[in-house]
Amino acid sequence: MTKYSLGKWDLTELVKDPKSQAFTRQLDVIEKKVKNFEKNKKLLKPALSSQKFLDIIRDIEILIEKISLVEGYASLSYASDTQSDYATSLLTRMTKLGSEIENRTLFFDLWWKKELDQKNATRLIKKSGQLSEYLKHKRLLAKYSLSEKEEKIINTLDVTGSTALVKLYDKITNAFEYVAKIDGKSKKYTREELSGFVRSPKSKTRETAYKTILSMFQKNSGVLGEIYQNLTLNWRDEGIQIRGFPSPISIRNIGNNLDDPTVNSLLRVCKKNASVFQKYFTQKAKMIRVKKIRRYDIYAPIGSKIKEKTYSFPTAVKLVFESLEELSSKLSDHAKSVFNAKHVDSQIRPGKRDGAFCHTITPKITPYVHLNYNGKLKDVFTLAHELGHAIHSQAASNKSILVSEAPLPLAETASTFSELLLFDRISKKVSLDERQKILADKIEDSYASIMRQAFFTMFEISSHDKIVDTPTVDDLSETYMKNLKEQFGNSISISNDFMWEWICIPHFYHTPFYCYAYSFGNLLAFSLYQRYKKEGDEFVPTYVKILASGGSKKPESLLKEYGIDITSERFWQDGFDYIKKQVQDLRKLN
Image (cartoon, rainbow, N blue to C red; front, side, top):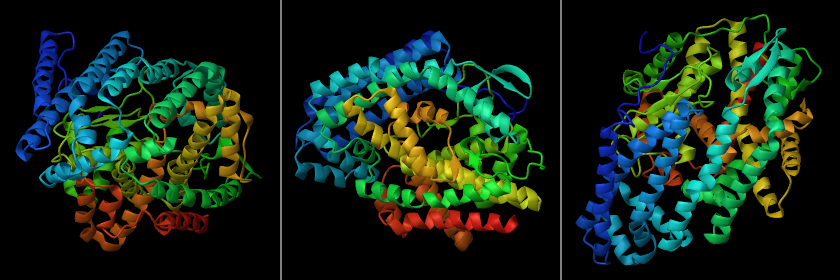
């Protein structure tokens, strides 16, 4: 077996054995660091020297790095097997530890946000280098911070409150056993396997795959809907009633260091351009020779005579490496290092968390990539996407752990850019018919990553507003159905079983209002990619600098340095113009 074969990741760089004395010593070191840090409380005065201030910041960085190792190990172990009682117990234990440490070190955060006067804060910020924007943002959050005692109560209760509810959602949904009759044979499938069938050339297979997944969530809608409503109430009660944020989505926007008008501009342009994909789906109906496509059919492959290719995992890895190498050998080396470190979990197995993600523990450790690789072309693009995240992390690896991670909207830039590189490379290697098919797939991927995500966010805005009136799960499902109808117009037929689709979306539970980051990141990547195609190698240093900034700068100001105004609707429209051109190119090929 080579390092590019399907397999599991190696987590021993984080924790060698959680049942060993070495792990106990690892936790003991953390406890000692926390106790030493607590001694800084008596030093926090307005006249604190800049050197002592930076020393305290360095202590925070070291402490976070050490905590991240054990928390990261627990999180990744749980993702590997969500049905393991030991992994579940360890995750709970490490989450509780993290909460306790956050409470014990909270005094510094609150001192910086609320107690220190502006004059001395400005003095210290001037000496903080790459941390200046981070520290300014912390001060911005001061108006939404509570007293130390109140913050400790919330941190403590979150472990058995919202965090526990999310874990419960994962545990329930990852335990689902799907039985479907496909090609005349009834058998058990994982959700990942069934999701692959939504791109089947057979209409009945696509319908069966969707119905099997949706019916399972509908069957469990009572408990899953109740979990969602309680998470949403918690989000509103804490964020608006207690902390004073202006709206539920503002909580995420401010966390992303984005201004509300920027996000509003993005969502307005997405809503205005719903017709771009509505026209595409109307065109697609003709391409697959039906009067009107159903929601089951939006990912139906065109050119059904062309057999869908499967890609071995080593082949997929090679394709992604080659596409990255064409842009930059440095970025390609970043991707290779993930495999060299054995930080990829790619195989499908029962109990493993669905989907894909990239998790950076600390800037000093090569990121970990989680996949459920099934050999389809979409899986190759998923590999490119997650390695793009890993590249982004490594490009910013010289930054402090406090600012190395890009805010959510910027975090999707490198992942989408990597997919565009792969798309261009694969397109050059195939026949005209295959290019038509791949181009259609890419347009549909843009739909899924931009329009669908924007409308997800619009649904969340509606559902968070409705929660105040304690709606039923059916009420929320009706709201989601209205959202779908506005999104698709008359371009497709939507059956009632799709009203339960919202319960299938983990982001609604894990990270409210996360989804617009995909719309943001994809449209931004389209803009950057067009500059790359125009400027060639001259653009690469600019691109690398954007990635290397991590989260050290406010997104609006960072991008403005490179002539990108994300507060303008015109900027976001440029991304849709790129998609329109793809639709026109497809029409010419047809």
